[in-house]
Length: 140
Image (cartoon, rainbow, N blue to C red):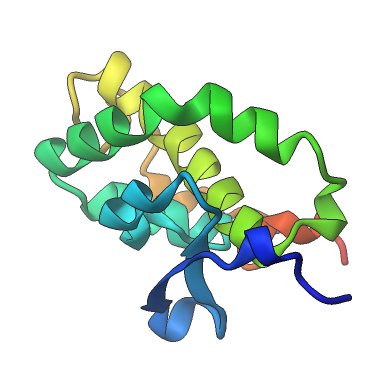
C-alpha cells in the first residue's frame, strides 16, 4: 500500500540497533524529533532507557510529550494496531514511553527507579523483546 502524500513525514534517522526503521513523525508532530531517542519499539528497551535516565531527562521528555498526548491518541485511534503506518508507530512508541515514565515524574519526584520495590532487573517481561505495536501475544 502506497503512503498518502500527507504521510511524507519528518525522518530523524536510524534507531541504531533498536529497529531497522527510521524514526519519523507525521506532519504536525515534527517537534517530537527532539525526544526521538525515547521512540523505542519494545518494553525492554523502554524500561532500560527509563532506568538509566536522569531525573532531568525524564522531566524534559515528560513535559515535551504530555501536552501533545490528546492529539497523539486522537491520531492513533484512527488505526487498528496492526495497521499503524510507520510514522504512527513512532508516535505509539513515544506514547508508551510517556506512560512508563509518567509515574516516575508524577509520583517519585523524577527518580528513574521505583522506590521501595523489588529490583527491576528481576522482573522479566514475557513479551519484553517484542515490538509492542505488533500486538503479539506474550507467548508468540
